[in-house]
Structure formats: structure tokens, C-alpha cells
Length: 257
Image (tube, rainbow, N blue to C red; front, side):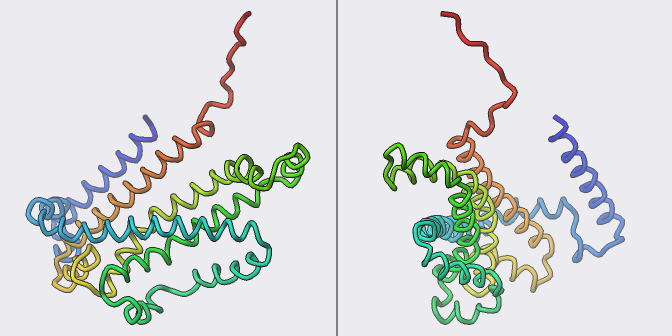
């Protein structure tokens, strides 16, 4: 209960302080709108909010699934071939050093202003944590374990299927959790480059018209969508790796025969 009540109590105090500052006009309403004004946006602009939410969801989820496929394939290829590892690893690191805004003109030239540009931006953001998480999971497998399985007659495929793949899943889900939260951010950044619909477009238009309450409302929607994707990944993690969450000090007496 402390894990829930303490953060909730801090949130309530911050909301009370926020409402007080906005009511006493200490800060102008167009700089910091009240929480009531932000919540009013959802009731007054529900249809418009949903209209811009759908493209962002499609871009984020599609880009995330493509990133899982490409990242997993790249990690497996790097683990199987040392030559590919030496070739691809430096380029993977370099891909994360270039800001997306810096390559925005190229993205627009290559993909235009459609949904393809948004999906490509999500892939750029999500590919690295997935690939590196899975690859590092493969590298954590001990050489003695592989030698033991080969001494018992296991083929290379069986070593991968029954040893490397299960051992790498914790690292894979760690990278996937990061990618799930980054996917919405990548979709919004892609929408900043241009387009006709999306939360990024909605936020840009609200900012230019000084409708700060709508900007805060969009931020809340982005947080909720990111947390929803993160929660789905956590649920999958607990389902496939349920043994990680069992109490380690739990002792069961052996049944008497």
C-alpha cells in the first residue's frame, strides 16, 4: 500500500498547489492553466482528441512491431557471426548519436509527410534498445554451459533454443520496455515533421495558438498511451518469465510417500 499511497499523496499535493497557483493568478493562465481547465479539454474536445490519437497509436504500435522483428533478427545475426558483429555494432551505436531532428529533412524527402515517415521515426528510436537488449542477453550465456550441452550431443539449434533464447529473455524484455515507452515519443516527434493528423500535430497547433490547456491535455494522453504500452510489455514479461517473480525464500516441504 505504501508503494501506491505515497506517490498518490504527492500527486494530490502537487495538484492542489497547481490549482491554487492558477486561481490566485500568480502565474498567467496561458502559461500554467489550472487542472480543471486541462480536464475540461477532454470533455469539450473529445472527438478532436480521438481523431488525432488514432494516427499516433497506429504509428507507435506498427513501428514497435517492426522494430521487434528487425532488432531480433539483427541481434541473432550478430550473435551467430562474429564478422557481422564487428560490422553492425559500430553502426548501431552511431545511429543513436545523430538527433532525429538533424535527419528530419532526409526523412521528409524519403518518406514524405505520410504515416511512413512516422513509422520510420519510431523504428529509429525503438530499434536500438531491442537489438542491444537481446544481443547482451545472448552474450551473458556462459561458455561452459554451451560446452556442456554440446558434450551431451546438442546441436547448435538446440543450444540456441533451449539455452541462449531462454537466458536472453530477461534482457530482451528490459529493452522492449524501453522501446515501448519510446515508441509514442518517436511517433510524436515524427508528427512534428509534418502531416495532417496526430498528437504531435495537435500539440503544435495548440502551442502556436497559446492554448496551453490543450497542450497539457495532449501530454497527459501521451503519458497514458506510453504507460499502457509499458503495462502490456510488463504483463507479457510476467507471463513468459513468471519464475522471476516467485518468492526466492519460499520453501515447500516435500510430500511424504
